[in-house]
Length: 146
Image (cartoon, rainbow, N blue to C red; front, side, top):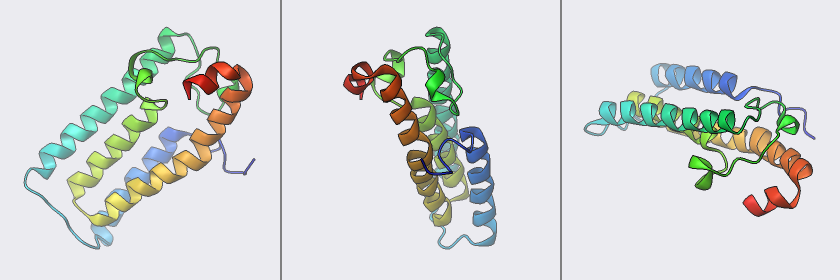
């Protein structure tokens, strides 16, 4: 296990990347890519992202399983209903969409690059370790879901 796995809470990670997107758009925007209506699109992406993330949390609450991403071994159920029929990680998808909305608002290429970096970090240090823990806990049932 790498020392960064399951160490940075995803909401803290989102806050760090959101701050980086804002800072990069102000201090090193690289290339601005404003398109007509980018602010409306940005608001739509942020709202959609928050809605997707909240739907994921509510599905976990209904299943009475932990929403603590730092302790996947405490999960009591594999949630397969609602958005989880379409995505194994709607909470993380929602967070990425919200960051994408922030990047669209700023319209700087650096912001979009940071969203990609967020997704890469989250996949490597959060999602993959979570999936290993869930495979160990739920075995073939989770493997079938994957």
